[in-house]
Image (cartoon, rainbow, N blue to C red):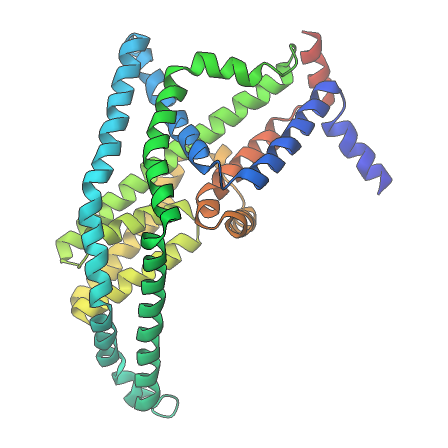
Length: 356
């Protein structure tokens, strides 16, 4: 055990700079764990600014001046941001309609699955089936009513929503506009000679940008093609369900499984076990297969790949700490950690960088 600890210390903390960086990581991790919920608007703004900075650099690479590139980037961002608020009433209407029709949907399932009573009469009785669906309807209605009532009716929720809506675009604006001023403020306490840290930051920057930018592209493509399929077949609440399918790619494995449930249930409610339903599930399955086997390998380089076990543990850990936002940030944080481990140089490389 002692030999193992000595090898780890020699591998990762062989000089002053690596010790300083390790201490910095511990402090930042504790800070995020303690104040992560409070600072979520800041983290969200940093991620958005991080993505927009890539767009800004792309425009500058086309020989467009920094000022014009910045203005164009901000116009694109605020245009997209405003479009979300324009779309919110329509999405809210679909959500409200879905909640109102939920009892009708459950009754339709009773009729559809009533045939199972005849096929499995020894296991299920009609009374058991009716009792199950009645209890299911009551539980879902109560949970949704309580959750939506508490969220929409509390001052804290309204305050948080307004705070996010105002603070996020403001902070994104200043993160982009004053990047040259803010970055030296953040790095001013670091050692003067930090070749090792610079290499790690460069690696993290590449991996995180590839991941976050790739996920945005993946979400957009999956949501678009899902909507086209749903709208073509006439599935109710096509926009709402397509957005859910697009967002599901944020959570590997679990997201695709969870979002399949509302797709299948709405298809059964609308068409029953007919050819239309089978077309829906077949095309939806094709989208999921193409996403996992074609789109993801094309968008993401192998450097961003994480082992499935690591992904599951990361989702469970950060989801348990931060709930929904933990699920949202889980994989970027895992990618962040992987980038640190992969880019941590050997002791000789660290010493040579210190001497440069």
